Length: 213
Image 1 (cartoon, rainbow, N blue to C red):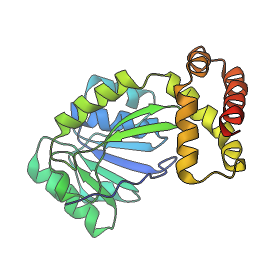
Image 2: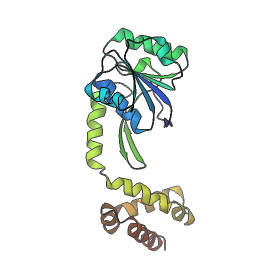
Image 3: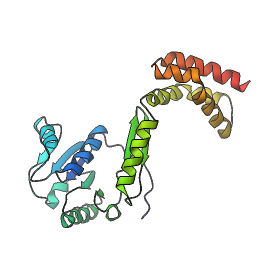
Image 4: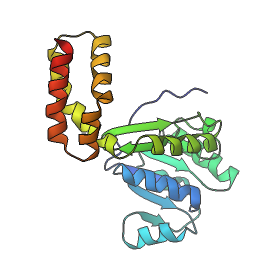
């Protein structure tokens, strides 16, 4: 099965994670990062999930899974260590036309939860369509090493430069070349890394102006 990569707004959406172990803990962390209202269904949970429930950061349904737990859910993740339970969660969610991911068998669900690196407005995702979550995790670690926190500044910088890039009346290939030109400029990189984004923006505009002359 092939999955088409899309972005979904989870802010304020009720998302249900069935399972309370390490895998469920990681899925909950990812959902919370994007503003989801997370409900965990499990008779037992990790200490981290318990702590989140105690502070009302997540809702913990201290129970074995029942189909009614999916009522009102926008998205569901089956993350137990029991294949039969995960299969039941997938079946029940699909009957309700709810997005569902089976952490132990991605092909059973209708979406996958990719490994993600977030740098401000820049999001880098890796997915093997469920073939090898371990490979996706290793590649994510490499992306984290290669794309440091300064890339959040670059995303902000190019957001500010967007109209300038369009104003040059350049074709798409030319805009790509101009973007690479800014990325490769050592002065701009130093300013971005130092968090001096206004100075970086001024330098980038000067760079673009001289490049296009």
